[in-house]
Length: 377
Image (cartoon, rainbow, N blue to C red):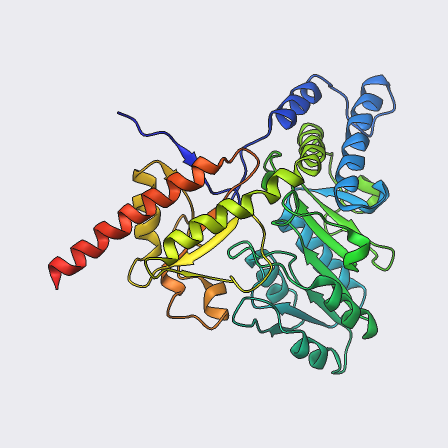
């Protein structure tokens, strides 16, 4: 008998929302190029601008602040490249940043400093304040919520420090969007990255949000699309899906918050057999749980749960498909647990029963592995 499939890997990608799929299908029926002035072109432009407002509303900005790009990775790169062009000569990144930020910073040719995390995975603002006092204008990259642990960073507090030092604060909000409320102005960010597929839109489309202090300089040249900030004909259908997903995600934020109760119930079950919940002492996304059980390797957990019909991840999604020890958990001072970290992440279609079934499958697998170790011993 085939086991029912339970998907709890939303931090890697979310299943597409019906509203996003429907918006894309309607957009596919529009043949025009958004830059064309004829009727079909104007219809395509209307689709793009409607979606721009939907995405802007999700984070509380005016539509003109939103530049559509190919995804979160490009949004991060566009922000970093723009800051470098503006004369910022060093980059401060937290140890918990996504590789899309860390590797782009490393490739920029600028000096890169890494802000340490505390034991709960929160960037140390005392270290940041001291680093900002050094000579040179700094671009600071601090993600809103970590993709592995769900830990939410103190962005507004960091922004005050960055602004006092005449710096530029870039926030990777890819994991946070659609899971917690985001107010761009209250955060104090200069730029902010979003990705459609993390909140139920299609893969291959994202956005960079820019405030009045930031000047976006295109890295991709050609036509004058996206107000000259990003050349290339817009992905009309993808953008339509992004906008629809953003609108529904904003509506569904209260129900997303309810998953915190389901997450915590699972956490108590695994802690009862000595598993550790990473980032438990910090504010976290309500639908993200990062746990580690010493001796129960990440890849073994993923495989056992997959065989039980439960799909989860170890760390962040990687193009190699390989499972590596968690760099983020290591940065939290728990190198001993890094090879054993597992991420469970729910989303818009998750149910309480999904979380309960995940716990059942994990505990059964943990019991089997423990029994085998005892037999070997």
